[in-house]
Length: 355
Image (cartoon, rainbow, N blue to C red):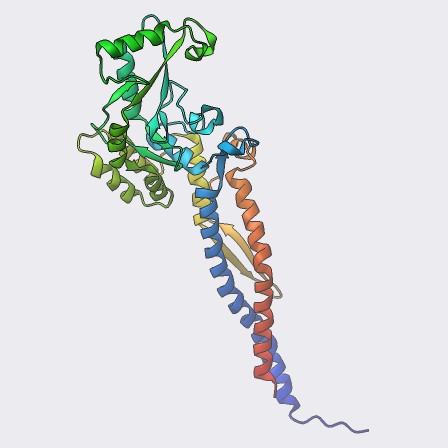
């Protein structure tokens, strides 16, 4: 039997070209897919870091008072405004919309009312306690428990301060009488820790005055989002718009420090480091004689301090835990797409050489 192959030289030449081009064609397709995929991954991770990683109320079984506050918001509020949301009555279902911690500057508002408990003893005065409550309102923040939003009251707007169930604002005969009743009360509900020496007085504001304050309050949620997204100048401008007497000088300086990479709180430092890690994610491509390797890397090389690393690993919802989890999910979800791209590029090349 005689077999004759015509144009053998052409076939051999085409096979050499095919073997050379197939690798380049596949790499070109994967380069495009992976670059787009990394941008999608970065967007997903930033959303999780800024909004999905939350601090939950201490009692997970009490769903009637379930409150989840983004961890990024907790850290940035502590850094910028020096308020501790995590340990405030916001996160305590048992507070039922009241501000029970008299040292906290996170004032809980529920159904349009603020009710704040403050310790009193025999040496307490109406004027001193009223002034302290006013300071807490001016220096702290208001958390609207009905909307889950946080606000900063505008300067020189705090007024209408009174004792709960009192009709008078300011120091009057009636308000003094009410204050004395709080100091001398034998009711268990008006004692701190059932101690006769540490009683409490409940402070509030007139509803119409609080409504006025809230209409002109600064929306801190949008301001924190600006900072989270790196829009520092936008956040600073929002504060400057409301700052005619320099009362927001310190928060403005804190945002400027964050912009410059200088932070005071360890939690905020960790949060910003993780943000940098995500922003700098990219695909590293290495081409060898018989193999092309794609690796997900970050150019952010600074390691976390051991104390900061421990703080992250102790929490189930830590930044790094969620980061690893979401990257794994991203790989699984995109694996088939990458395989389809390889198959498509091979098929396209075969069609070109199929004579």
